[in-house]
Image 1 (spheres, rainbow, N blue to C red):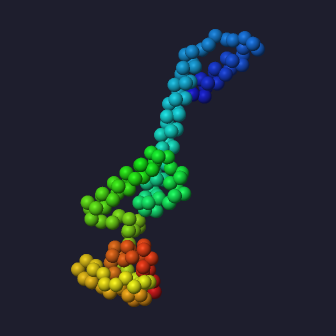
Image 2 (cartoon, rainbow, N blue to C red):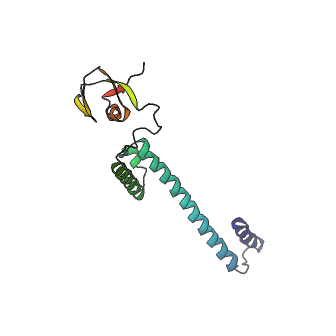
Image 3 (cartoon, rainbow, N blue to C red):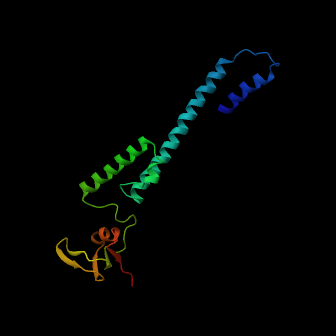
Length: 159
């Protein structure tokens, strides 16, 4: 409909003689403008929704701090959206006392074997303490090991 009404206006202009005006069709013109604004609004909403989804995925893939090259591409309101989204996730994680950012895919086994890459020292893990010295192997809960793995202090040991 939007295209047909606009096309109708163009045909009216084209059918007039050069240098002559046909009576202005304000009804059709107003309908075209109104529909154009509706489509523009829908288009803007679609773009915002798509960008919001990407921004949300950054929080899960990259973490709570975005690299400078990504921040440069964001509008101020998108930066605020990311900050608020990150705060909501942090609050939920704190309330539920579970780190949702550890594994995006549920692990097959809650325990993993790890090799310590750098001396970490004596660490309290739940109900026991363990000495994490360089090149030592340990069988730890995945949730306990992930923080050290993400810091580059240990790696999962796969036989």
